[in-house]
Image 1 (cartoon, one colour):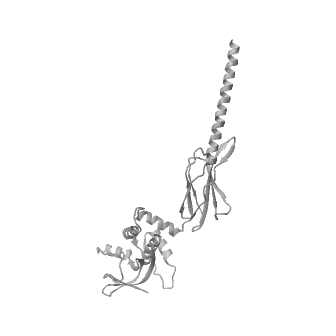
Image 2 (spheres, rainbow, N blue to C red):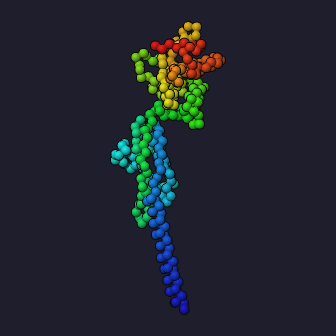
Image 3 (cartoon, rainbow, N blue to C red):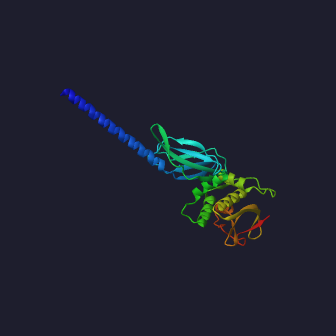
Length: 278
């Protein structure tokens, strides 16, 4: 009886083992099938010379592969392998600024010692930011809220610039320099201040980013009585068929002297100052 009992126990164990192996194999096949049918959903966010790639987590995935190309239908190079199924972000750094890149992602799992891949995501593209674009984006993130309207953002940006930046002496822009706006704006954001050219360049850049037809003007500023203030620069924005002047730097200066004036969206006949472009 004892021998028969041992044989019966061994047979039972073998049945359980086979059953368990069958379950494991079935689970692995089911997991592989789920991943194979999946397709990651990808979103891209541009930064200064970099792109953040995010995707929706794929159930049962062991990891992901990220691919990049300079052309939508070009050759895609695998730039990263994420060896963790719960990790759904990759930051691709050291890219060229102001260049468009194309990305796609696929998930993978392992079964029988082999990798099984999902479908590739749809190809997504984005253009990396230049230094000035990144600075402007950072400024707007502090000065505005996403719930604001376009004009509310323009107004909030004006107030934020007036209240959080300062006057710093800088070289005046020569009449022959036609490409000064970007360099003055970038240094203004970096230093959190500058001269009138810096303020005008920065606010013009912000307005353009918000979708306005804006330009930085330079010339001479006079008091309303004709007394000359001096060489000056300001922002002009075309709105509703009319051109308005925006001058956060002079409003900042007046506020520091205890004077309350508004130089936001004023006309040339504003009763406060005369703006004469050179």
